[in-house]
Every structure is written in C-alpha cells, then in structure tokens.
Amino acid sequence: MLDANMKQQLQKYLGNLREPIELVASLGEDQKSAETRELLEEIAGLHDKVSASFDGSDDRRPSFIIRRASDAERWVRFAGVPMGHEFTSLVLALLWAGGHPPKVSEEVLQQIADLEGDFAFEMYFSLSCHNCPDVVQALTLMALTNPRITATLVEGGAFQDEVEARNVMAVPAVFLNGEPFANGKMDVEEILAKIDTNAEARAAQKLEGKEPFEVLVVGGGPAGASGAIYTSRKGFRTGIAAERFGGQVLDTMGIENFISVPYTEGPKLAAQLEAHVAEYDIDVMNLQKAEKLIPAKKPGGMHEVVFANGASLRARSLILSTGARWRNLGVPGEFEYRNRGVAYCPHCDGPLFKGKRVAVIGGGNSGVEAAIDLANIVGHVTLIEFDSKLRADQVLQDKLRSMKNVDILVSAQTTEITGDDERVNGLVYKNRESGEEKTVELEGVFVQIGLVPNTEWLKDSGLELSKFGEIVIDGKAATNIPGIYAAGDATTVPYKQIIIAMGEGSKAALSAFDYLIRNESTDEIAQAA
Image (cartoon, rainbow, N blue to C red; front, side, top):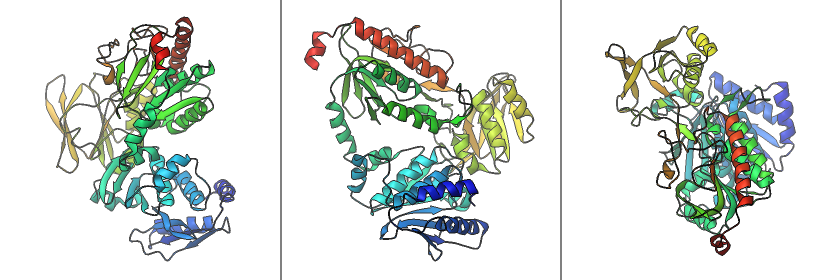
C-alpha cells in the first residue's frame, strides 16, 4: 500500500509518538479489506509503539479504529482506506492518539473538553475531495480529546450502497447522532460554533473588548491577507475579521497560474497565507460575518463594522475584501435539490456520480475544466452554455471536444432542475434560437456560472456599489468614503484572479497607509480609545 518514500516519511512521523496506540480492524473478504489489512500491518511494522489487530466487530467492513492503548474510550474510526487527500488525516490521527500535541490553541482544546452531551459524528468523504481533510481532521481531534465524542469517517466510494441510502450526493457530509448536520468545508472552530450553545455569546464578548484598530481588514482571502501584512509591516495596529479565513481559495483545486509557482492547490495556499499572516502582530478574528458598516462622520474619524453576533469593531481605516461566492442559477429545483444532485464542486463531489449522467452548466474556463474532470469519472457529461459559443480558453475547448462521453449544448438556457423529491433526475433547458424546450435525463447538475460579490451587507452604508453589487474603487483602491479601501473579487477591478487580488490588497494597504499619515486622529477617536 505504501511506497518506500511514504514509509520513510511515516516512520519519521511515528517517532513523535509518546504513548502506544492500537489499530483495531473489522474486515471482510473483499479487496478493500485486504488493502486495509496490508496498510495496517505496514504501519504497525514501522514503530514498536503501534500494534494492529483484526478482531473488530464493527458492521462496516473494512473499517478500523485508532485509539491510545491506555485509553480505550477515546477513538476515531476510518471506514475504507484513507489514502489520497486523507493520508495526512490518517497520519495526524496516529500522532494525536499517541499523545503528540495538535497545532491547536489551548482555548480550543479546552472548549472541546468542556462540551456537555454525547456527540456521535459520521462523516462521508471522497479521496479526491480537497475540502474533506479539514472536516476529517477536526472530527478526529474532537473524538480523541473528549470521550463523549465519537467520529466515524467513511470513504464514500467504498460504501456506495450506504451513501445512496442516506442520499449523500455532496461531500464532505456530516451526520450528528444519526441526523444530517452539515455539508461542506468546516474547521474545528466552525463545528464547535454549531454545537456549543455558548460559543457565539463568548465570541461577541471577546470582540467587544477589542481596542480600536488603525487598520481593520474585513475578509481573509488573498486580498485581505496581503493588505494586513502590508499595513502591519508599516507598524499599524492591524486586525483581520473574516467569515472564513482563506475565502474562496479554500474551494479551489489546481492553481497553475500563480506566477513563480507552477502548481499548487487552494487549501495549501490558504494555509501558507495563514502562516505568513501569523508572522506579524495581526489580530485574526475568524468566523466573524460582517452585517453592517457605519462610516466615520469625517476624515480621521472612526469607522464601525457590526457583526452577526451583535458585536462591533472600530478602526480609523478599513480594507474591505469580502470576496465573492459561486453564482446560483436561480431556477426551480436548484435550492430544493442542493446536495441531492445539485453541486458546485466537481473535485469534491464528482466521485459520488461515478458511472452516472451529469450536466455542467457554464461554458467558461471553470465550466469546461469541470466537464473535463467529470468526464474521466462519470458515465456521460452534458455541458450547457447560455451563450452561442463556449468562452473557455481554446486549449480547454479542444480537450473537451476530444472526449467521447461529452455533449455540448450552446444557446441553451436552463429553466428547471427536476427530481423525484429525493434527488435530481433531470434538467429542462430552452433552445434560445428556436424557443423549443427539451429535457435531459441525468442524476447530477454541477453549476459553474461565475461569481457574486459578498457585498449585500454594504447596501445601506453609503458606499458606492456597481450595478453588479461590486464595490466601486479608483486606481488606488479607494472607495467614495475617505479612509475606506477595498480589494479583490468584491470590487470593480477586472479579472477575478488570486494574483490580482493579492496585488490589489497590497495597493489598498499602501493607500490606507497614505491616508493615515495624512489625517490626524479626531477627538472622536481619542475619546473612543
């Protein structure tokens, strides 16, 4: 199962074990069970503090638990073979079970330990899902920290009947105590916020106690991280308030146009952004959704941002970098069948549609790339484009047209996504030239039609927005309100690209620096501080 390089790396990691751990497997007679046995025997053979047994009694086969030999009440179970993107999760589970400390704050660990109640998590992942490892690792950490929390992590491809019986059509998919809990990427703090009833009140209290910032960045994507680093380097007291640090980059798979880096992946880049920000004295406040902007009454005054938990932060200058999200189709059936056949991430959810018929809506680069990826997994792909021609780069179009299990429909307007009340079973589109409506029978629809700026919270603030909802900025990233700057996909800057967002964040920071040194603090600020 493990090549020589992986064995060497794993053996090095296992040297960090402080206590013996046990791997207890429940196996059948199938090929996956044989692979699981081979994997566990190889792991046990790499270190004398690891033992493997094969007398487990779990109904899911193959599956295995990881636990500390001296504490059988704290365990995590993997069902299937956690390779691919989940191999790192497996390594971390081994280390944490063996007493190696996780890179999580003591505050978070204490919050997990203090949870009251019993929490039985089941989570479904695919080996190609780049959003799944964070959820797998979060649940693993919680299960190995609090004995009243259990986590069973299921590789959907190995348990296809179970996946279909529970209508899991998008990963990561989490169930709590047998009921649907959440879909999509989450870290441990986000999970805690959902199950810890006092978390929001504590977060609001902590936020309210913050002193005013000289620069507050709202949004934690590439633009926000870049802006914060630049203003912190200038010596200004800087904070980042983000709904999700990393932003949309976390949902991006292959990145091949980040100059000087031939290839990287979104989650890896987001982790590098977070690590770079941590090198500076920047106050990062994650899981904070902005809901209202109250601009200063005059230059040099205090701007205020109100958050969903009711708390607010103040700052002399702001950099707004709240990014964008995937655009919805807005047709009947889209909302009703979301995560039940309607999906937005082909890398994450594609394996769940193996051998099935799916549609991709959108003929730009994202749509064509999604169709190419899916064509290698599913039975058939129908690409549907509203325009009279595809808009993707020609090299992508050529690749798509070379694939035998792909149909391309142009001048086609999707009007409805249909289903049987349980899951998607088709799609209706109108030929824009003839007006004729047609139905395509399929099991999945992947929507790839562009972005919507996350700016709804700014509509009554006096900040100028374009007809598309983008923050209007000038060549220096300045908005129409003195002291407020904006950067990235939420703005009118053309070409929504990671590298452009980073440059715009730096530009906004330099403009904020110029503003702060040219505008003295008003009495309002002095009194507030």
